[in-house]
Amino acid sequence: MEPPPEEMILKVPENYLSTYIKSHRSHAKHAIVNNVLPSDYDESLALAGIVFDFFSSSMVDMANDLGVPSYLFYTSGARFLGVNHYLVIRERLGGRKYTLSDADSVVSTFASPVPVRVMPTFAFIKVTEYLSNIAGKLELYAMKALESDPDPPQVYTVGPLVAPQKEHAGKEEIINWLSEQPPSSVVFLCFGSQGGFEVPQIYQIATTLKRSGHRFL
Image (cartoon, rainbow, N blue to C red; front, top):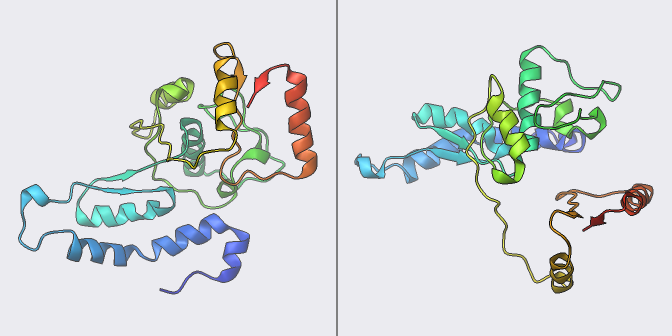
């Protein structure tokens, strides 16, 4: 299977990946029909559904062809799901692509408007319409917003799912320090799998945290 043009991966890596995966739909269907579905139909072995991740969302069409339900296993949080849902609705209503000069976006799962400069890169390209799953009690505000939406995605909360990690050098020290802090007194910062910053940005984050007067990890 020929991959998309190489220049696409440099320009819009998310689109490159989703386009490449989409081109494999017929192969995935062929594999399921020939290797998963029984040759002699047995109801107890019938295909119950297909679960796919965010970048494989185009596989929903394959599930429809096979006549089974499809579920998106969404590994980000409820707030970010709200952003995805907002982008889909925005596109349906004829919204144009974002530019950095746009006003902040009012996304229901966020308590404050979201600046366009922090919107994910796929907000500037094509967005997907296939949404579903996450983790519940950790994000009550966002979950309530999704449930009250007049056109909500059907959401089943799961997790949190934490893969076994190698023993961190400072783990014991961190746990001991956290155990000594009052309840709900520590700000936890996580910059995600691609969180990389230039030195001036790191300096600003560190300075702001220090001036905030709050404990943080």
